Image (tube, rainbow, N blue to C red; front, side, top):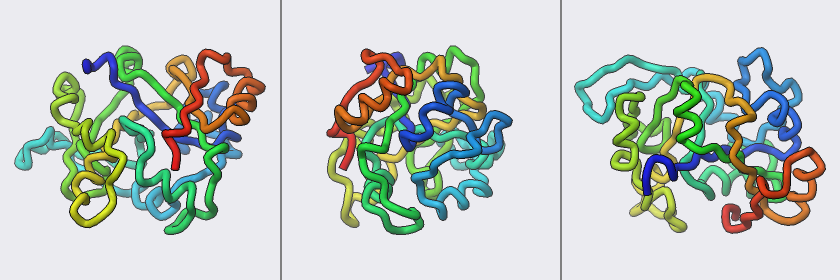
Length: 217
C-alpha cells in the first residue's frame, strides 16, 4: 500500500447528496452550508468537537506545533464500518433517531487528490477526542502509513475492554480545513440497489456508485 492508495470516507444522509453535488462537502460555518442539512451523528459529540482544542505534537509529547479546534475542520475516516456508524444505525447515546443503512451514503475521496488541492489539513492516529491520540501536520504526511494503524482500521471486531486501544486507533481521522469541492468526490458507496437508483436519479453516474453492504451493520 502506498499513499496513492489511501481513501478518505465520510458518511452522510442521502437527502444531503443534491447539495453536496452542487457545493461539495461543506462546513457548517461555510457560506455554502446546507441550511436543510440532515444530521445523522451524535449531537453530544458534535457539540464537544465544536470547542475541543487539541495540540499538534507530531507524535512527540514535548513538541507543540500549535493547537486547533476540532470543530473548525471536516473529519474523514480512513476506513468504513466505524463504531459510530453502529450508533447511527441502531440509535442511542445522543443520536436523535436511528438511520436505516439505505439512507446512509459514504462519500469517498482519494487522499492524493486532496493533497494536490492544497487544502489545510491535519490527521490523527486515533479517535479525535481521546486523550491518548496524537495529531500531526502536513510535515508528517509521508509518514502517514507508519503512523496510522491500518490493521486496526480494517478490524471487523473491536468491542470489549481488551480492545479499547484498537477501537481508538480504528477511528483515526483526516481533518480538512476548507469545504471540499465536488470535483474531489471519487465515488459514492451505498447499501443496496434501491439506494443506488436514488443516487443515479440525483445525477450521479453509474460507474461512480459502489454497492457495498459489508460497509454497514
